[in-house]
Length: 439
Ligand code: GDP
Image 1 (cartoon, rainbow, N blue to C red):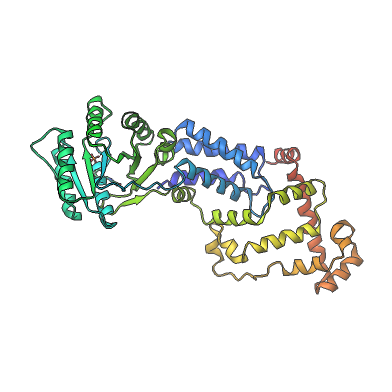
Image 2: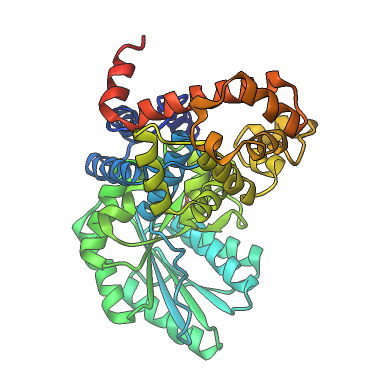
């Protein structure tokens, strides 16, 4: 599912790889790639545009100094925004009423009958006592199909082969359900090959007469943008309560899952992932977002970092970096904050792709021990003035920290290099100039 989109998003993120910070320029470039990936996945143009604009704004707003790379930060922003795009929270179906009446609508072939069976099966496993009503009066095979499914899952099916009146059958079904103490009544309805006035009138009449508590619109995810257009037409007429996306097990490009909520403003409640009765999942926007992004646990990694790093502090730090005043005290504090995020091996394991590689590698839990010892052996003056640490001072620091002088020199050199890079990236104009000079 969504492999193509995943690959393309991966490529988009590569633009940011190796970049020290998020800037207008690299974000604009990445967003262009992301928008392309979304359009290729058959996401509605307006949705893709609004989405990338929002991600860009959020990403630039988060441009603070943290322990995570721009690519990781952007992945987190993307994950949050994709989740919001698909509806944010999971939306349960409303089962308060007794009986709860659920109307199933959609075009022919979308998977209505299959879903009706799956839903009955799902509710039965939750302790409900459902009744299926075979309301697809134009397709005798649909009635047979529902009866077979009912038998298979042990759920009764109400049918009236002599009637061609969808409203009448629905009402008879409800009466039957009430008589038998069924607390959920699922009414399968007749579709058509395409949107048509007769079908809409018919199902609107069933709605008016039965007053369902849930109207679930079933749509084939493989139909991409058409799925979204059909959803809109049904919603305009029926004002349904939720969407069921079927056939997500196929090689769908994902566009329907990503655009439907923003176009009709109704939640996706279930997804179908196969022909079997068990192949039904409650739709969790956040889990779907992670799946689309093919992420490891970057989300938690960034969340941990965000908990540790105070935005105000980060802004102060930015100022210092810009003035080239970032010193060994700041460096030491940063190390303490990174350490608070957790054990190094755990942290690295959260980065997708790294976890597996790390399995057999021993990492000292205290990877910063030497660096800390060296900094601790510096005087206050030296920490604040790294430039002033000449040879005699280095010798003393080496002795004090139990290191060779080469180690001290290496750290000071690394610190200076880091300071240079940070300064460059803290100034957008300079960063832009530098990047233009890159091949
Ligand atoms: P209806 O005309 O809307 O009632 O559609 P059906 O329930 O008869 O489904 C049409 C076809 O799609 C059938 O062959 C189903 O087995 C198949 N189908 C339904 N849902 C899914 C799904 O989630 N995944 C897959 N792969 N096939 C499905």
